Image (cartoon, rainbow, N blue to C red; front, side, top):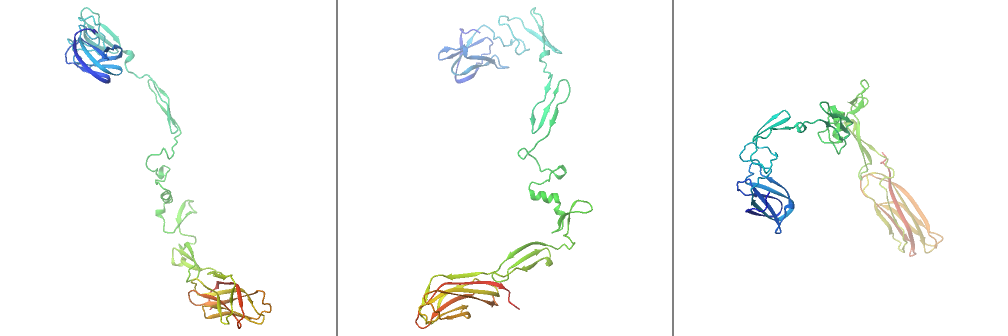
Length: 392
């Protein structure tokens, strides 16, 4: 195309690699020029595309890279090589035309099977174009690939089948869909408990029945417990209350299987106390050496044990002591005149008591001196625990 003819139109472009020029000159014989930085740059042009149906008025220039510059539209006396003549309504896209021939045209075309027959005038020979190699027929299809263990293989030419093979492998990460029914090897449920209930058909069972193997059919079935009484214990709870007997409470599905069993009471409700430091008195009235109070205990028989070490300052004076319960019951009295006043001597004992009501109990160890001699007591201890129920 000529590049030195009359300037018809100038259009600027900025940072573009594709520029559409709408010149509305209604002409075929136009040329163009791309100018970047005041220099003609035909090397930047990748191709020129004329707008289909509007070739006389619009075309696009595509560049090899994004640029900024000017497009000039120029007058020329030569036809673009890829435009049809405006005098003929029949248009073949891509049919080459010699730019120097202006009076030879295609007058018609016929598609005969795979041959395109073109008719030409002005003494030009007709042209036959073989289209058999571009008829769009698929000659072969091959299968390949695999998903979750399933493979696709085989080749189809004129006829045949593609083949699926392998073994399907699905894990939790692949699964998508509804819960698989029992008929298809699933449970129809999405959690363990509902699955167990469905598989065992627990909805058809009677309360507190057990799942067992049926002798005649060999199938699992719901039945009453052995013996056919339909009465059994389903649970038990141990308790050691402060106002009653320790027991195990059995719970069943009927009054006959709901009951309490008393446990062994010996050694329960244990309590102890001690005062290990040395204490002295010169009083001939009792002075408290140790006082302790038990927790709340039920009625029953209890053992009270006690021990201490004692010493006096004169071998001619008595050491006195007592053990009392609830400030009313004296369970032990001690009055001794030791020969050796320089050594501590041991004393201990126990007693068994019955309490007929629930409550707490106080245990005291007291000591005193004869006349004004000094009595000493140390390592004072008491202990308390239950040994049984009240004797009838």
